[in-house]
Image (cartoon, rainbow, N blue to C red; front, side, top):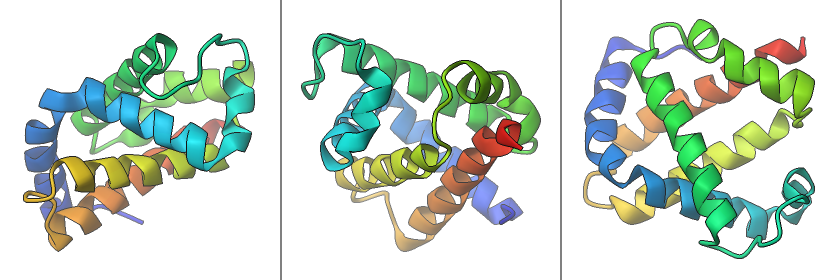
Length: 143
């Protein structure tokens, strides 16, 4: 699924607004994923506290959002832009690539909740396509 020029413009414009709350988005999306998809907790078993908004959740939520900032800045070449982090997830962390799609969905839910006025159907489609491309780029090193 490729992103059109219009999609890229919508993603960048929306992310310009949303990025101001990136830490909150990351924390809530990760919390939502761990609650809604409890099997994902296995990747975070080394954390003492998996409660929504806990220190480890907030910290990793920031890491996830830094990755999205990178992805937005590398929107024209996501595979190359996310290559290093994809390599770590594939070889060191051995995260099931299906989890990237799960997290993407949780991010979409949080974005629609937090920015409901700006999250138009057009923006929703563009963000969904973008996050799908991010998930695909994160899965590239598994092949």
